[in-house]
Amino acid sequence: MLDSILESLHVVALPTKTNFRSVLVREVALFEGPEGWGEFSPFLEYDADECVPWLASAIESVTVAPPSLNRDVIKINATLPAINGREKIEQVLSWFPGCRVAKIKVGEDFNQDLTRIKLAQEIIPGLEVRLDVNGQWTTRQALQYLGDIYSQVSNIQYVEQPCATLEELRELKKSLEVPILIAGDEVIRKARDPFSLDLEGAVDIVMLKVAPLGGIKRSLALAKFHGLPVVVSSALDSAVGISRGLLLAGALPEISYACGLGTGALLEADVSDLAITHGDIQIVSVKPSIQALKKYGATKDRVEWWKARIRQTWLAGAERGEW
Ligand SMILES: [Mg+2]
Image (cartoon, rainbow, N blue to C red; front, top):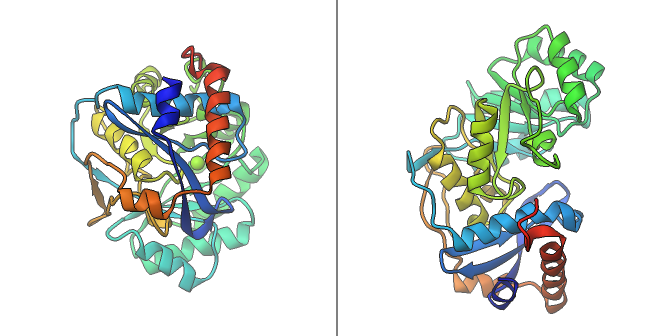
């Protein structure tokens, strides 16, 4: 397996339109197998252990037939990075045509966060919002900030990972006096074993991200195991990675929230086309274009770096399916 991954490997460096997660160029490793293409694109700072499920997911993508689908069109949410200023916000929202829900990054500066949320709802009247804090608030801050936001903002779908740990989320949920749902993201996808977590009383919604959870099959099993409403999302993947999220969203028995699979709109260039139309993306099989692989091909030393990373990840557990 390892040899065939390395043989068909392409690494692309895709320019981003905006500074999302401080990433200006998104490097993505792509390889091909009997069932199609797979994407291996953990963020650069992740160590080999954390990369194991990402590689397992890419291997599933090239070796396992796609799941059977319950729907073939997926509702998408806009993703608004922590940017400020009406013009910039308006510009980013325009990249998500027809989306009626926006996930808004918050957590750095509360006043700027509140302004960002209000501006987004001014630009798109009736816009539903989800706030992604990436675990940056203490329980105390979360209680105060969510109270403040609730009194000034309407149409709040949920807040994603307001605090870092499961214990803090549980404490928050116990004391929270405003009716805002809590979604768990990092607490699930960065857990050693997401099947061992007791989410009861801590989160209301489970974020499902195919690559960090080790693939579609495992994500479906996790959704079933926890039995909570889910939101399918991505991590600034190329169209190859996004297509896996779309398949997961298509295969889930039930889906009540728009999916965070429109992040391709934050890339200046992609390896294939997955357009958002009227707030939806159609599930199609994705194959990177040869021109794009060439045009955005990473430098030789970056390709070597990714090959070494794949070897390390393979040895760290992907080889034995240990993750
Ligand atoms: Mg998140």
